[in-house]
Each structure stands twice: as C-alpha cells, then as structure tokens.
Length: 106
Image (cartoon, rainbow, N blue to C red; front, side, top):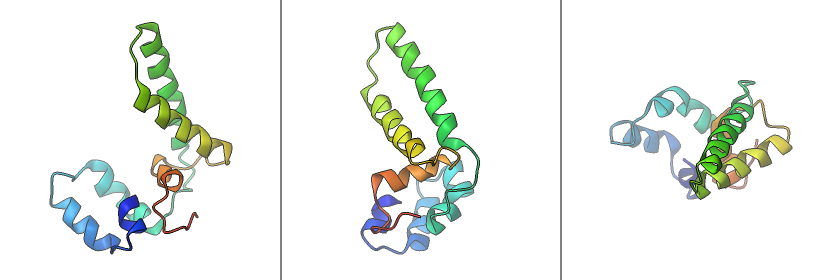
C-alpha cells in the first residue's frame, strides 16, 4: 500500500486487485479501510505489542545464536513510532515510517 500511495495509484483499485490475488490476507480484508483512510490511531496498542513480541523473538534468537537482521530492523522501525507517541496505534501505522503516504503523515 505504501507503493500505491507513493505512486499516486487509486488505493481502492489496488485493493480490489490484491483481494483477488495471492496477496489476499486476513489483515488486508480487515484493515484495508484503515490503510486507505490512513487511520492508524485507533488505540489498539498494536505498536507497543509488536515491540514486546519482537523483543521476545529477538531475545530468544540471540540466546540460540540465530541472526534475524530483518526482524531487528523492523523492531527499530516500531521503536521509532513509539518514540513519536504512536505506541497505541495499530501495526499498519508502520506505513508512516516507511513513507508511502505521498508526503502526508496523519
């Protein structure tokens, strides 16, 4: 969706294609309206919960000496959101960190 916003595509049209392809997911079906409206501040605490979950996973990976660099980067992205007082936002708000809002962050 970030690419959709960044390139000026119609998000509803893109979602329609995604829903009928292998990209179809529960998250897409249940949260797509929030992506399109950029409505992430719904007080679910998703960012804070994701930070906790990623910390648990990364701690366990370190304990077993397993490298998980992509997860570590994503954990940092979520930490940045929390530092901006977005910890109660849902996890789709990661889009605001990655760009893809046509320069708009709500």
